[in-house]
Amino acid sequence: MSGEELSKLIDRLEKVTSRLEQCSTSGKAVASSPSTEEESLFVKEFDVIISGPLAEFLAASGKIGGLVNEQASLLEKAIKAQRSYINTASKSKKPTSQEAIQKLMQPMATQITAIMDLKEKNRKSNLFNHLSALAEGVAALGWVGVEPTPVPFIKDMADAGMFYVNRVLKEFKDKGAEHVQWTKAIQSLWKDLSAYVKQHHLTGLTWNPSGGDALTVAASQSSAAPPPPGPPPPPGPPPPGPPPAAVSSKPATDTGALFADLNKGSAVTSGLKKVTDDMKTHKNPALRSGPAPFKPPTAAKPVAAAKPAAVSKPVSKPPLVELQGKKWVVEYLTDNTSTLIEDTNNKQTVYIYKCVNSTIQVKGKINSIILDNCKKTAVVFEDAISMVEFVNCQSVKCQVLNKVPTVSIEKTDGCQVYLSKDSLDTSFISAKSSEMNVVIPNADGDFTEYAIAEQFKSVFNGKTFTTEVNDIAA
Image 1: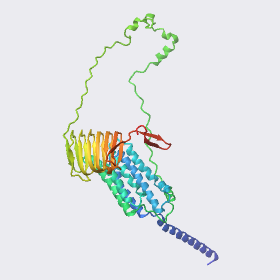
Image 2: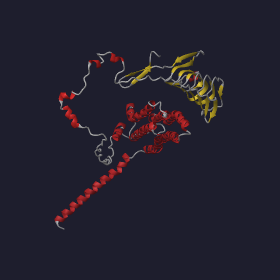
Image 3: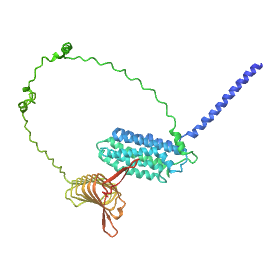
């Protein structure tokens, strides 16, 4: 073998060695990448919720459409923002400052606020119960900030929305299968979320003790390059041609005769009739006494007598006190002060509609009580688990003997609520109402009456509006 051939052989060996070293290095890099970028198990389990219960809820909302579908799209953004937050937690240590946690949760909080604002802006919508059901229950997504009992927190928030879910089910049970499916989908979503948290985050969101800085990890995820754009859309159709010339049915104007008259100059007016003084109305007052020559007199039209408007008589229906499923229905009572509802349980509700000058007494513990379109009507009850609600009422009264957590007053003029010593922590929610008073028992057995504010003052502070009770109305 000559020296030249030996030199070529050595060069080839060096090239092969270099290529083997490169392959070895890239193999290690490929082998190590899954361990650093592989998503945690509980992140993959959360993806199951997105592809399962959430997808079913979005499909059910899409069938209803309108505001319900719009609100569902906001929920999808909120849950995907929560997925990013959980993924960040799986790769980083828990931040030590509350400011950092709030910054990480801001995208999710923004969508939750938008869901609630959509409900408040559409109170007159016929789908308001749908909007309220999601707006009340969406707070369950706040479990990521709850320790050490996030599972009960989800249940409490979901139960807050169940009041409106039941309303939707009651309204559309027999006339809208898509609405019934919607109620099942939203309940399934909160149920599966609770089961997921119970399995993977029993005492709070799980962080990675050996991970990096949370804000840095979140920033690296948000700055990831987006996927390449798809192909451009196909070109549109060619522009339409010019419109066809309009064919006129009228004879063409003799422009030659027109220009011939204009070329006469001042002689063009020689054929006009002269107006003498006796023809001028400002010099001959007699011409102004009659009708104008161009406006013939018109005879006055007889005015038809207005017909009196027909007065519609109020619909009179027989009174009704009946248990329908899990709901006590009390309707059209008039001057009845001895109505008593017994044999109740905590799953039943009481619905009182268009009663006048009547009193209804409810024994035992009930789920909720609603007074709708009632006048001078009073209800006395022992316990209510959810709330007592007054809607479109006038001069109504309510007395709780034991406990009720919430009293809602909407579009009602004149409402007086008597509380017991066990229900002094009751919350009052009012809207578009007046003359609302609450009677509180004193230690000496006497009672004190307090008024609920009706007038408020709102001031812009540079960022948002702050609202407080008006001093005049206080």
